[in-house]
Image (cartoon, rainbow, N blue to C red; front, side, top):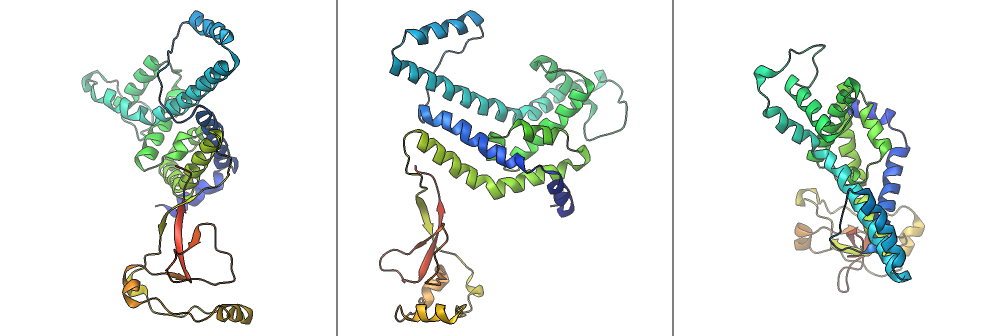
Length: 303
């Protein structure tokens, strides 16, 4: 990874981009959750008169059925919003298929400075945009080529949640980013996914559960795991107390025996500092385990 390039991207990133992605996750997940986690068929029409007549149908319903119909429409709208924007991550692969169908002899002579796109890709992009209904100005073609290719690269590199809930602000940032730094941009977004992907997933689950009526506001621990450390890294070092007060508190709890050697070869416990409150992702071991062992867990939304 180009560290210098990543630092350049960081210096250019508005603070609000990731914040608004989280807000968008909450907004869309709330609409999905109010209808519940289900799949259903619905009639979609492009006829304006039919769209208008749907309002008349809602008016004829009693209150509870009308509310359910509105929640369903809002959920389908949110689902379609997510689907449509995520579909854009596949546009570049479709354009490449179109480029492969072109006869090289029919392609125009390249003009202007060379860039990362072949003449076939440029022609295929213009054709795709014309058939899909996008504006065909040269500036828009150039911008869309770069943007769709970057989205495709991000998805292939494992960017998931950020692409699902990306915002117009995120899109503008990507579209206006210098083309020569495109690789650094993709790496930066992949780094965001590594840092915030799990948090977005937990937020998504929590909002959906609360929208469905679970107002506990808690993420229940799941998949308990103990730290796994290579045997060669285990040196039997003692855990030094940070103060006399800590040492007294520790000793007042009675004798403490180290874990047996065989268990160290398999699962190495993290020694606790008793008077400290564990971090939110750490829980005590089960009954019968060493009282001072801590278990690392990955928090997840209610399933």
